[in-house]
Length: 79
Image (cartoon, rainbow, N blue to C red; front, side):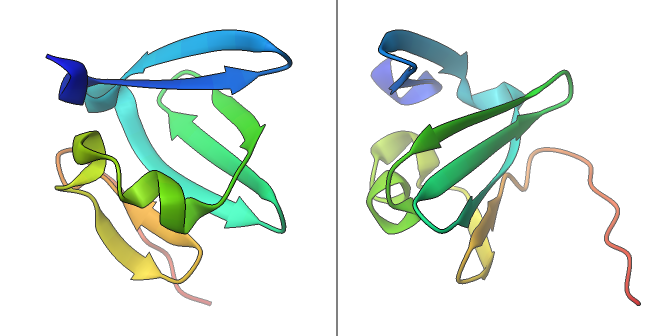
C-alpha cells in the first residue's frame, strides 16, 4: 500500500498525503507545491525526482513544471 501514500518532509517534519487527494503538483524554482482540495503544501525538491515514485505513475505531465492526477476533476482556463 506504499503507492497510495506520498511521504515527504516539510519544515523538518514528516508529512503523509493520500495520493488520491492530490490534484496536482507543480514546481517553481526549487520548491514543489502539492495541491489538494483542502490545502497547498510546499516543500523543497525536484519535480522530476518526485514523479519517479511509484505512487505518481498514473499522474500526467502537462508541462515541464506540472503533473496532474487524472483521477481528480480540474477545470483548465486559457487566457
